[in-house]
Length: 238
Image (cartoon, rainbow, N blue to C red):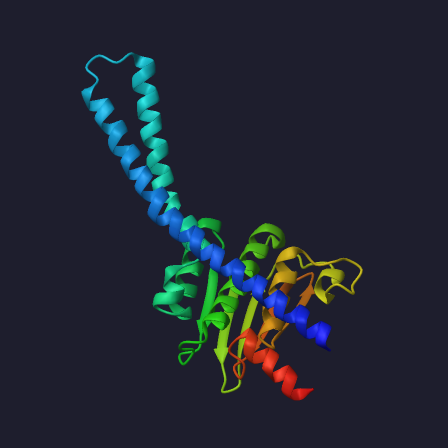
C-alpha cells in the first residue's frame, strides 16, 4: 500500500510539473517570442522602406521574410493558448472549452456539438485542467484517427461528480486500446495520460467503440479536489 501510494503521489507531482511547464512555455512564447517577432517585423519594414534601389532578389527576400514573420505572429497566440489557455485560469472551464472547440472546428473542418451544464461553474484548478486536457486529447484523436465527419461533447455536473462524454461517428478503435494496458494492444500515450490524470483525482475513464463510432467517458468525483486530497482519502480508508 505504501509503495502504491508513493507511486501515485510521484505520478501526480509529475503531472503537476508538466502543467506548470506548459504554463511557463506558453507565457514565454506569448511574452518573449511575441515581442521579438514584433521587433523583427518593424526592422524588416524599415529596411524595405529605406532601401532606395534594392535588387529584385533582395526585395523579394524582404517581402517573403515579412510575410513569414506575420504568419508566425498570427500562429504564435494559438500555439501558446493550446499549451495553456489563459481563459482556463481567468474565466474558468466553460469559456476555455468553448474557445478550444470553436478553434478546433475551424481548423479541422469537423463540426462539434457542445453541451455544457449551466451550473458547471468553477472547479478546482486540477479538475479544470484535467477536463480540458481530456477534451483536447479526445478531439485530437478524432481528428487524427477516426475519420469522423462530426463530434459531440457533453459535460454535466451533479452534486457528486463531473461527467465528460466525447463521441464521434468514425471507424472505431481496436479493442485492446479500449480496454487499457491489459488488452491485446497497448493504448497510446494520450489515452494513458487521460487515465492517469483522472486516477490522480479519484476518477476513471471508459472507452466504448464500434465500427460506427467511439465514445470516451470520463468521470471525475467532486469530493477530492487535488492529488493531496486523494492521498489523504486513501490513508483514511486504509
